Length: 365
Image (cartoon, rainbow, N blue to C red; front, side):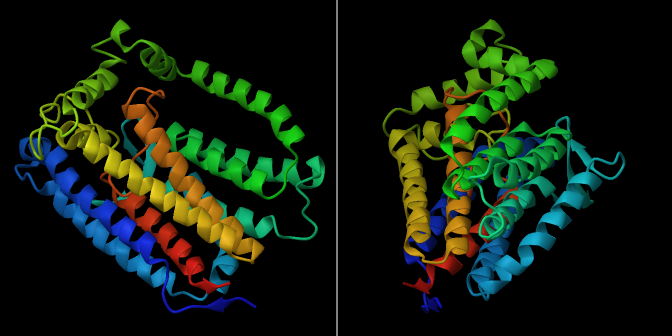
């Protein structure tokens, strides 16, 4: 039986606190002009981000001290609850419509995004499923096909909102877990062609997605339309140079770059703090990913290994895609940068997931 040590991984905790501190400061800097223009309070988003961060850290530390058997006990009911929420959010008049996607549930100022909770729920459930003796991922029919059916069903519900960004992170995390759990590479390679065809179909089914791909290839073909956001992001990152323009000195945040405090906050970091600031953020994510996979490799419990690897993979995929999008390496997908972008559901849920990772890091080997 695994023994539990007193303290969790302090390197993970320190890295998270540094990312959160940078996040609160940059949310204020990136949002002050917009918040003052719309709400008459330049601290509008910064105050809420600080509260979300404080609440998230509280839950992170709480989860870090939980009995580890609870994670596996919550796996199945957690998945069913999240599926129910993904269905409820699609009901007109119940789900809140924002930016063309019906992705939110809530009353007044309080709202949650069910797709964010589904990411962690799927990791816990898949990790539980993959350790069952009767479930063999080496078998296409008895293991791989059922797991892909679950993953595909959840992805379909998210795409009905639609939310391609969350769906991409969810599928990427699920596929990494399936690979780690022992699926045959031959099966995955064959299925990858089906996945590529499906992705192309999703893109072709929606004109705005085609526009995003076109803008990614050459944003200057439509500089005032589909390519506008990427062009403004590159305008922000370019002048940053080595040291940046200085904290609070961004020009693009003054109603030029859309979503400067959410999806495109990394652009403002690069503009104000330069290569050194942006490089520091990337280094912090690299340290977090290294320590997360280290937790997965060090544990002797297979379920814990899958959970730790899944959470770390989720953070890695989301951060890589976000930074790739704002720098023009990937098409715009609407994915936030963990710990830094403004957002209650995303920040709180991500910190809860890190709490699970910290809990597993307490195991003595």
